[in-house]
Length: 356
Image (cartoon, rainbow, N blue to C red; front, side, top):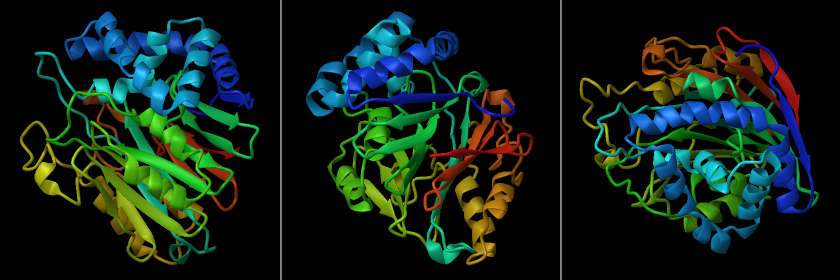
């Protein structure tokens, strides 16, 4: 994981055709990542067949609530020449892997995100981004996905194989980044899975549209959605089955990692125990950014994302003994229409520029 990422381009007004183009370009990556996820599900006590059955339970719900994106998922399956269940496993893996079947398994706290308003940056630009932490086998198969929906919306971001998207920015001046939340209120159920919601957010044309989506969202498992908007807005939505909480910026800066800040009483790791220590990466990143409030540059953000305080489970995460590390680092400059992406730990990998 070092150097320039593969870039996948899809362009069509037809969702199924977009999916078909996508799947056809990432057949090899899908095959490789499925081998890794097979082991992930086995560690949770599930066979691949059981994972597929659970994933397919989402299909009728999505055909009703997000039919266009469900058509795109079907197109990915056809283009990649795999069963629809495989595509659905890869797009619901966040929800499915939050629960185990009779096996005690370590839960990961993943990712550190931020969003900056104009008052925080030297050139008065809005910027969003994150360090994405996950298993190395996922990082080995990432690619930059360019989507032209031929309706005025263009999207560019990072994707795992066959996923609708993971994080990114769009031509309407919005960026989206996400991080894991683990709540005592999380339940096994069927709702809009995060990969579908992430893509839907990146189809939005305004911060107001994102706010409405978050107001109506009823997730079964918890997750942070961190949004930056060229309308000079920076927003964190801590979404849970109980309530979708909103966290506001201070001095134009908002950061979030894996702590339920709005309602710590439902955080699964409060109080922390020996095996689930809490590493406050979000608070650390906020401290570093606040030090340069009003003078933050793109280069300074890069240095902050390389931070090793609390190593190995630092902002630049090296906790390899848990099969977890920073697999990519992203800086989305929504006013300027480009991103800086480091493939792997940013302390080791160069940031490459990718244009929307």
